[in-house]
Length: 481
Image (cartoon, rainbow, N blue to C red):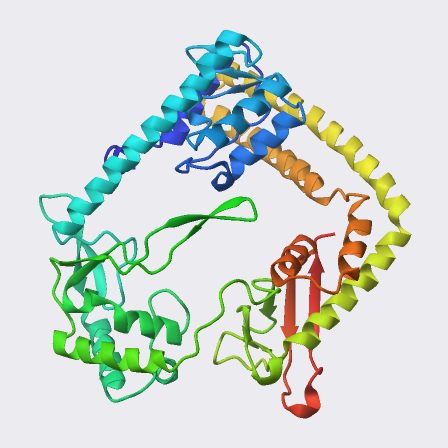
């Protein structure tokens, strides 16, 4: 990233060019390019790598070109083993500019596995250096956040690496106003409503929320401090998958920053006492997922996420997270029942057409084969275009025009193939879902997994509220099948 910033170099494009030139010299035909720039710590965090492994499993490729084997996996031994196994069982070669690895050759396999092991060591060394560098910068009072907090803007330090914060006067007045309201006993929700009413725009979101206000009031950046590792990334295992969480860390660092404060420490300390008194009266939330439709149901008017709100007697509500929206709330149980009835109705219709859908799958497979053949033709054309340019048959303008036209066609066909992969219906899916629905004692997280599998999104509409309009809402349900 530092190299690209100062030397105007695109690493990904450079690697792509190198590999294409290498392929051309060795008469390798390239059918598809997987482009990805991520940390590479886990396969789960690399969507392009997941696609590559899936295609390798299907036996689509004879070999994979990569700058070095270390680029394939930098995760732990489990991830390294997964990558090695995919290449071995599919008999797919790993081709680098310096060596060709045959996973079924005992010596190549050992060399390949050793390369993955060393890449993990290299990754950990680089990561350790980065973390030490960040910690050193924090201790010097520099600001490392990607986005400056409200009231400040990031300012590059003169004659040295790193950034500090510079006060934005108009925003600083709002910060002071927020602390003044808090010290007068106003709650975070009331403060958010007040700012939305007078038309003050927040930095990131389109409107102010109680959580945004609370985070600002608790942020010591406003008294000239830099807070580090307040939310430290922690890995946990859940249902066999490794997930990252960022819980509050009480052992964070608090350093004097290089920037000017907006709020006096006495004011800040008083605000903390008031916030602590209010938070002690709040009943702690139970841990774990509590909304089986989390992130799937949105407001039909403003596209904000619908939020579950616990209510007395177990009658939870679902309401729009945008406080200024006209959409009215409804009982969660009624909404969920209607959604389930709709899914059951739709599945019955699909079940009647199961034979047709299975036949349609065969048609889709045939279409995919034709598209892949067309892709091979276009890639051959692209290769000829490059040859014509290098042999001075095409000038630069003709080359760029022909190249761009062909690449657009290649991208369109790749998109069609991907769409076909996503729309092919598994004939065993419907029976599995039917069995799932018949189970009345499902846990919330299992319900959520089911809904996520079958539902793309749900739009919710309701204008009239009150007791007489409990189920007077409309739902637009978009299924994945």
